[in-house]
Image (cartoon, rainbow, N blue to C red; front, top):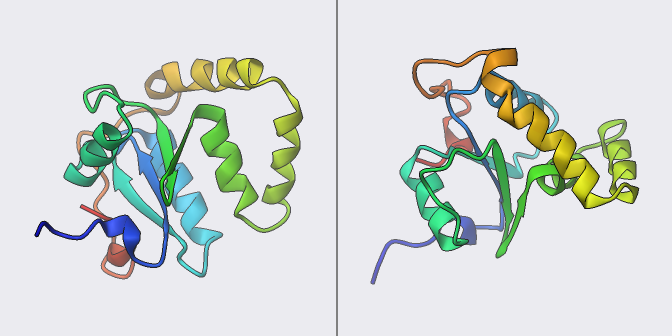
Length: 141
């Protein structure tokens, strides 16, 4: 019997993020501050958990997507991931779900433009973020 799937415990929402991207790390901190119940859990795309989850959803673990959100057995990427996160935060952030009325192709084109240029615009770290001891439980390895 293998180790249990870390997502089966109370159905947290898993956010996979590029661990060396400053924009992605800032977004993780933004979510943490607005998620006092701790429903969101995090793993870098470079981690074992991240790579395993990408493979689980037939995504290439060697391609650094900027964000992937997994809720139970459903995966969201690009603008759908960002809007899913907004939907699970309180107002005023929940109001961003109004952008769902825009065509997905347009939303994803805007998302891809930022994601493609995220290192140039926001910078890059030499290594993945190491969570503080009080946040360690929110991060999966």
